[in-house]
Image 1 (cartoon, rainbow, N blue to C red):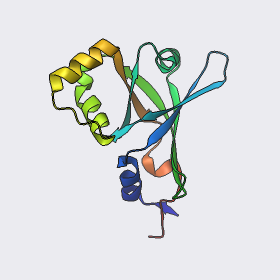
Image 2 (tube, rainbow, N blue to C red):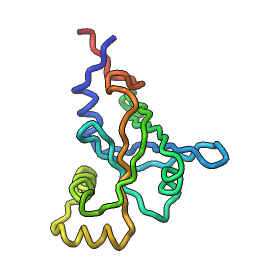
Image 3 (cartoon, helix red, strand yellow):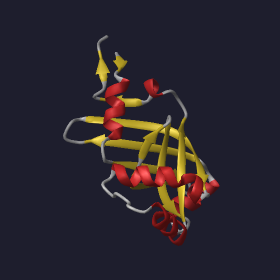
Length: 144
């Protein structure tokens, strides 16, 4: 079966959480739900410098994302590598798009920038390890 990538892209464009899993120093997984943005063949997730995710991915950039739709029996699991984007100005378009996707419409970009700096926000920029057609998924099969 082939994967309907357009259907998967529509699924990823919907406001939903990704379960973000990293590896703790003792080898156990650490997993949290987070808003995400899928754009330009990368996932973008906002976090702060005082959160566990920041420390985990500063030490070990390996990540796994699981995005699901329990009612529609669809899901996507993606392995990837995290780059931590520390520059708020560079990340501002992604912070804005991420919030917009999830219903937070900012009216003032300068205020958003100040908030991101005040909160110590960074972007987890996740590059998948494999092409989208090779991700582990269900509910996006096509027969053609």
